[in-house]
Image (cartoon, rainbow, N blue to C red; front, side):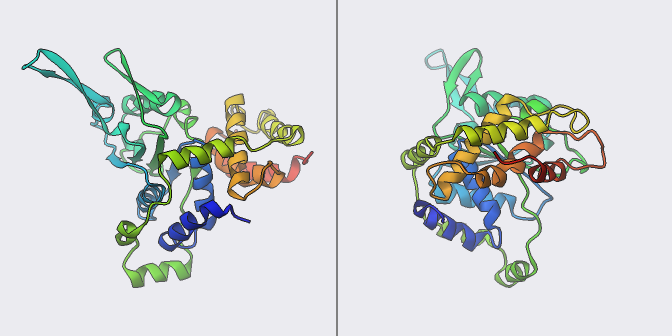
Length: 304
């Protein structure tokens, strides 16, 4: 059963993003867990449309930034501008000061610009010329990323990837939905018709409620066993950190809240496990995919 508070959100998102209910549940779960999202997929499958629609339905101030290799950190964070009339420097905030930031094609930016997001995503603040500025709350980064084999891309470092709670993939639409897209001429034109369901106050209240979801010692033990399984020699270059384990806990709590449950079940952990863990891990064997290994792990790690 879905939490009735979310019904109007999913109704509008499903009308715009066709045939992607599981993806929509995961991204809403991530938002409620106060996490950031990385959308990793080829161009043209609807990543930007999804981000814009999500911002609209949540009633969040939205800003899209197209990342390029010549973009500077000040283009994102802001800059102090000298005012000759009073002889003072006035800080002009950059696009990062919007509650919802779409970092489009983040892996086309230089490593220096990518790292400029670290403090914002982790601490909810930025530092410019030695002064700290707090970002609006709630604050959400949705970044899109093209496959690394495309020209002009810079792979995100592990420290940057770790700041994203989930890495999701849109994938190609099913046959029925793709034909419907061809008939309707795309879905982005419908974004202005979306009605905001929440505002910052309501969204923060929902996030607080999700964080209060109960997790039993047995559920915590199950998460620990999964995390510990990634540290077994021969599977991954480096296993999941305790911070990644905490991200699994937060996401599992939010998933339970999305489904109107007051406590975490094993199915909540399984639903978010791959999305939270896969982008943080590098398999030892190059022919393996971390998502495949993590999915198989769910079949072998016993539920307490």
